[in-house]
Image (cartoon, each protein chain N blue to C red):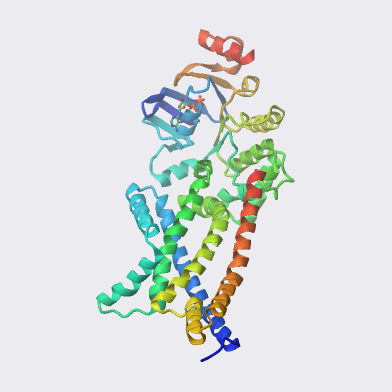
Length: 243
Length: 218
Ligand SMILES: Nc1ncnc2c1ncn2[C@@H]1O[C@H](COP(=O)(O)OP(=O)(O)O)[C@@H](O)[C@H]1O
């Protein structure tokens, strides 16, 4: 079953057309990596999928919800779509545990005890079972990002979107975050991730997509995509990323 | 003729409850209105934002004394007698609402857009986002200036003496007239203002240092 269906998405910021007809289907359990030069529209596309950006034209269906401009319908869609940002965006006045409990309690009307148990489970999943009471500013960037992942997981999303989640981290901290994502992939989570980590995309993603100037320039199963890139543009991009 | 003794001093001290009552009325009334104004200032509707901004600028540009006279004398044009306390409370409320509204508006705006966005992505309603994510952070930010403005209100209540409301400044004036000892009378008044305002100012400074420390930590 397709979890994400995007058809011919177009999006402009003022006079700048950022997405020029992007179509993509992601099946349940699939991991898809989005790569490309900065400014090619990867983040914008990802943000369109949960309605953080509105599209100018095209169709989007995510986890069985059609994209809507109506706030209540949009919230229904967002309950099933987790997103993790480059800058973590934890709520600084809440502990790690409270960050995770907030949406299950306030959106899903889960009881406090059940939400606490769920938060503990999600924290353990990202390897932070002992940091429930820690405030974000007491955690390293890598730990904050893992809490952010746990916060999304607690809503039991049908698909997770990752927007350059390791780009703000020191190199020695990216590994722990990538390991968490790799575990999720192994557990069968459907994921779409914008990344600069080529090795990671090659290893973890079933499929990789190269975006250029607002369109999908080349895509394919990760193994072939990286070992035998077809277009000269992708070849040039991969060369520049490696060396 | 009376001399300045403890009965005179106590007369001024007793008037302190009116200074404080007026302060509480203005702070609570101005606070409630200020919350509404701050929220209107970040509303989606541009018209609402513009109207609110206009109101706030008009009030902020008006000397409080003029506002006080308007509140006291305007009703009598319509044959309505209004107590000095009521007029003073209304004038101070209106005045405080504009300033508190501005303080809280800027605190709300200081919360990064990414916080709204994260809450949106978690499917929280705008109300719950405000209540659980934005307001707690904004309140922490705005607390030092809010307490600072409370001190301003306390001092502003002295203007109510001009329309005959007997708070401590007016009480000091009455004692001064009766004893011909203005220095003692007004030093007593000053001491009382200081006794009330000083701890609040210290509290505000402490809050500010605490906020700055937390800010530096992140
Ligand atoms: N909110 C916005 N307003 C105006 N321009 C934007 C906005 N968001 C992104 N852009 C522009 O859209 C283009 C694509 O950005 P983005 O999707 O972030 O690319 P990528 O993720 O591939 O680096 C960039 O030129 C960027 O400056």
